[in-house]
Length: 302
Image (cartoon, rainbow, N blue to C red):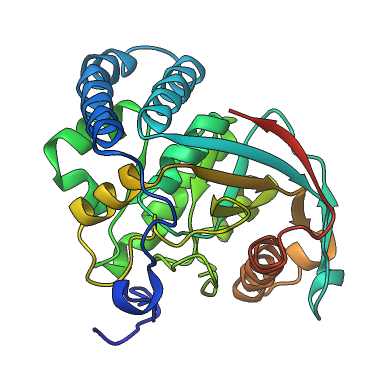
């Protein structure tokens, strides 16, 4: 495993140590049906993605949401959304204030478990994904991601970071919701990594709130790590595990938006401002991942 760097973090999770097999297996016919259904939805999405480039951002986000819901359902996954309450614990809680999430631009940040995460989030809320450049190197995935309005970031070039942050800020100023996973890598779901602060600068520059969200995958009454995509795991192995789970649920908990208090934004310490915002958002998400039933209420299931 490669050493961790500030820009290319590495999770300690590995398939052998962290990823469990499905608790209850689906039958072979159901597995085959899920795979065929998912493949059909993926290829049906290509013309939709090509056409979406010529419509408004709002309509494109709506099309992406419908397509993502179809794909998630084809894979046999049910989505449960929850509304979480603000948790301002820790030493930096006083630097931010809870803020109602507007209809306009919002930076939506959450923990990262699997390749399923962007699909689950897209199926629950319209938005634009901030994705790593490598995603755009796969022809089919690039077409789908670009059609969905994804923004790409090159993690191999630190010099490209300001440009990527500005692109996110522009999207936020235009009223878009941008979805980011600030850990920079995946964890198995039992724990999570620290949030990298760079993308939070975009929210500060655009003057929009950050909305934390917590993602968990469940089987029965307990947590499932089978959907995890970590370490040297392969995409094919992860897909086969997902389609083999008889009853898989994705739980998404949305928390109130947070933003820095005005005095902290103009403190003259921009590096510290975005670090503070990242720490508060991370603490909120961590409360939803590690203590998921702390003051939450179920909103809906899809």
